Image 1 (cartoon, rainbow, N blue to C red):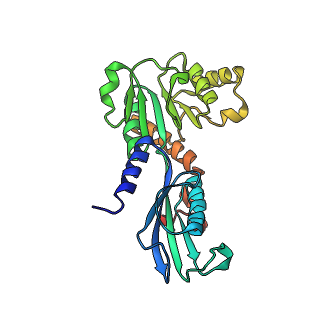
Image 2 (spheres, helix red, strand yellow):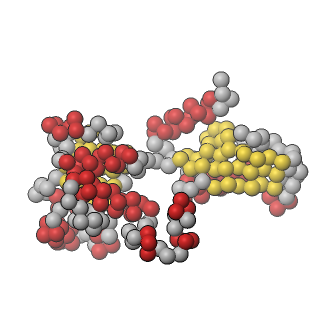
Image 3 (tube, rainbow, N blue to C red):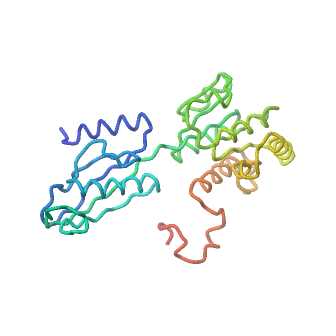
Length: 272
């Protein structure tokens, strides 16, 4: 039986509840320290320790602050703690040195796709591979076409009735109320709202949005026609262009060809 059983049980509960948290693990100790290699603790987004133990008071304070940063930035961080330093206000120095890695565990982003057809099928499959939580709203007849989806909604659903977080929304219905739905989605605050539409329809929807209180700042979150310019022809290529735009949006990318990123320091680590 693992000594971390209660901690792992807590992780399982946090995952089910989709609650962001950070795992802190002691991975190096030199000299005297109350925390030992392998000790673990969980922290919430406010830096409050949920469960576990990695050391005494000021160690906890340093790691708690780092946990807040890690969850906010979405990146793992390490903390090197000099237990013989008076600067930390440790009281009686332990005379040791320890290092802790803090790994954020963030909520999986949710992609809501409303519509039907081969583009939606391809979007669902690709988005699942890219670790999105996929929710599909479609007709009863289409419901069995999306085995990758976490949730399939076949009932009519207004944006105001959605009781779960939506990070990205793709509208592929080609209905007459696409303008109304786009407006509601933007007013809800969804960071990425896209419509699979022609240039002409995009203009009509954009005019509607402006007439109904959507500002230029809000329109920065509106993406129509959806996707990057890949000259996409097939359903799979259209889905790829849309998901490429979503990934670019999520990661703060430019969409420029990598060959134009001349300086090696601008390349991702795996390509540097």
